[in-house]
Image (tube, rainbow, N blue to C red; front, side):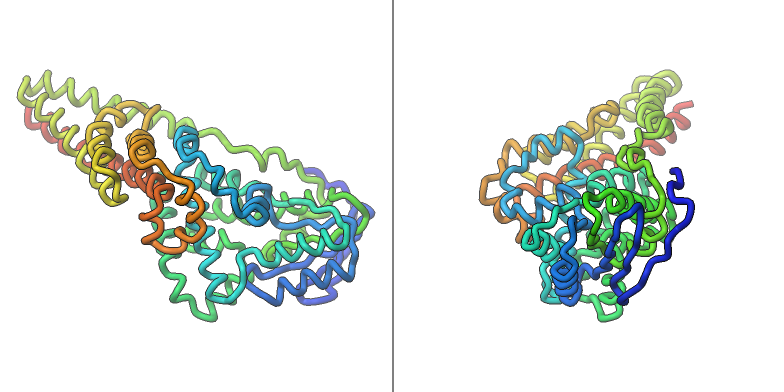
Length: 401
């Protein structure tokens, strides 16, 4: 990150939600919005109409832009491809966030992303270019995912579910906080306190990304519509030339993670061999039985929780003990593909997805989201089964010795 401007020109605060900045020969009007506020939506439209900018920058990435502009995008989803590309969990989190934002919007009588919709409409009406200035949501989620351990991944998932279920209990104080925060930040506020790296990825990195995109937007007069929580960071970074390529890169899995993925199967095999060697045929058999029962039963329980088809449940039970010994395959992926085969999503399921994700019942009823739940809960069950089986197998080896 290199400083291009020797001196930072002061920002002019003309309104509580409007900041004027001169940078690199451009006049930037920064509009800080509340994502769940009708007043913000009206302010955005008014500012764009009055300023007549060359370009309107919006806090959207391509995928979020399509979700706003292309209501039929769900019909094009290929759930099998999602599972094969190992993106089931990320898609499920995306859907949970979309549901959370939509339910909050309904509570306040505002469409999700209303201020961005008004910004896009106003840009079109005034003939301004549109710049999608935010980092792709999948990159943000993937970078967040890679920065957390297994336990925190589980906490993240269940916190999203609890946040989703608690929308009806949101009070005025919580709503005011949401108006000043990023939607991701609101959902992950508890984890953010314990893990500063999450804030760095969710907020600081995106502040840098947004600032760079705004700085290099086409034209000399720019209106940038962003969440109020991003305004201080953008003001800080917009006078700097920032290399955003590293911010768009999904870091590889850590060596420790890769080692553990191979280490656990290695330990299991070593324990079984030790059981046969020290305890004889009977001990070795008992260890194998324990491994298959613990892994299979808990994976099957996970599939049952997801209301999987009976064939899928049986598949999960028999696949988990074997896939757990192969770091390249997960029981949930196998179960998800089977569920997608025996209960193929229909066009109606894809069309109903925007409404079904608004309730827990809808999540389990819709064939698309049920497949995602099968993948996630089967994998969780298999992981629990592994940690249940390990101490029992160690105990059998000790008894045999």
